Length: 121
Image 1: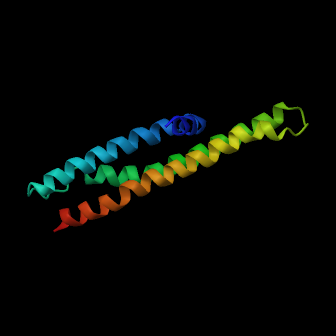
Image 2: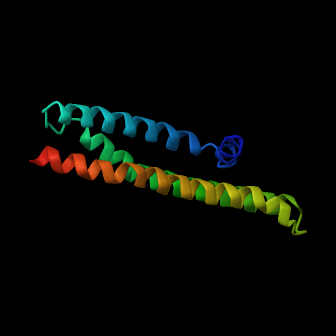
Image 3: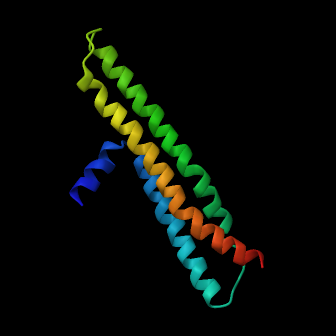
């Protein structure tokens, strides 16, 4: 659990919106699943989850961009002497946020598709 927290923090500030959107998306899907189970098959709230599924990979890409900017900033601050250690934090942030955005989106995508299909019936 400690390693997961360290990885989350290493992902930089873009990880917070990814986390918040994931929690909101999961809560809506859980709510809709309970409603469908009770026989209410309306589509209210489903569009929000679709938007979250679309936004999370974009946030991952935003984290990639900020991580690469951080990397170039660190390399520039080193005064032209390439320090590989200065680049690792930015590259790590870039990779972590990309993966987080994609995974968060995929976790929501499959249950969303199942519930959206039931709402259309």
